[in-house]
Image (cartoon, helix red, strand yellow):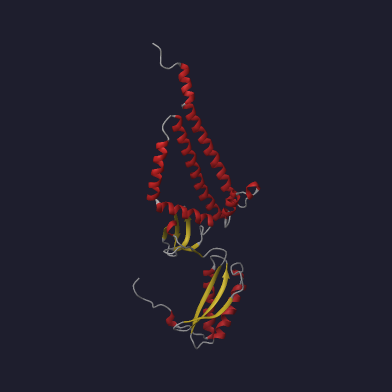
Length: 300
């Protein structure tokens, strides 16, 4: 009785089907490794600093130039986040193509699978609109460098110091120590108090019978002394300005002083100036209306 398959037929089948499947799998693994290596090199350069060489004039160079903006910690985090995203996209694309090619080699119908995948993708897209919105918002926030780790931001419902920036969620810690997890898709506007420079505004309310010229003179003198103080030489970046009477309150006139500072130091400068001004006001007999302060007592 003749066997339906000869040794040559079996060998031909092994080389034709399993061999092709193995070749596709090996090629997919190699392409995945190659793409990950390329992405790691790009993001590694972005985390360290400027883009050099041929890439500087390409779209990849523009992408890297955007990533390297900001502090080293911010560059590192943005590079790692975008690198993780790009590696995931590359892996998903390579393995999806390899899977479809393997099905074709095995002789399975691909058209129904692609049609079903398209329908499932549409259904998943409708069901996961919020998740997709969060991810897209996170990508643009990282690319545009709207904020980074260590920045003090106000995102509406929550404000505080940024502790982590992810593709889906941003983690903030407020002044009370409470940790807030904010979905990126729900952030409609961001107030960043830590980029480039900041301004310390000191609003002092003095009684209406106070000598405003004397008040402004004291504010100007103490602001300049703070500006020339070696402790704040690298913090206050421009000569202070006394803007004068800014508004009229129920209890007195509000006089405003402005000092341009390095990011994240505006509160420190404002506290130091308040202490100096209060001491000088006491010496000069300038009265600050006591009823501008909130009442004490009450429940905790």
